[in-house]
Image 1 (cartoon, rainbow, N blue to C red):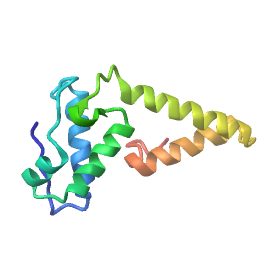
Image 2 (image 1 turned 30 degrees about the horizontal axis):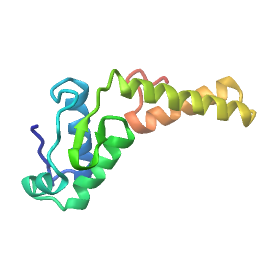
Image 3 (image 1 turned 30 degrees about the vertical axis):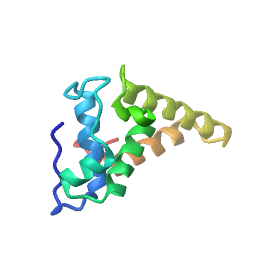
Image 4 (image 1 turned 135 degrees about the vertical axis):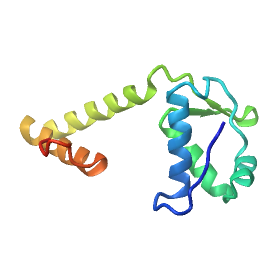
Length: 128
């Protein structure tokens, strides 16, 4: 596993680590079932606090990218497109909640586009 932390950027180290591991798992660079380094070992390797690595691992587990198995360690999950499934689940939950709140379909869609623009940046064409 090749990861690096750039302390000169605004992105927190745990997020840099989380994003790199998630991308490597998504693209198959990290094979399903691969055992990741222990929190302590990776923290030492990267010059980070153990809590920083632990936070990245917790977020990766919450996102379904890795699975923690006690003494067996942290393993790359057999994703089968976990990110897309989790995103679809979140979208379904949002749609159901917006509907319960009496928000129209157009209003709910506008809220989603606004949130996407905040997170990903405005779309190149300027329209949502």
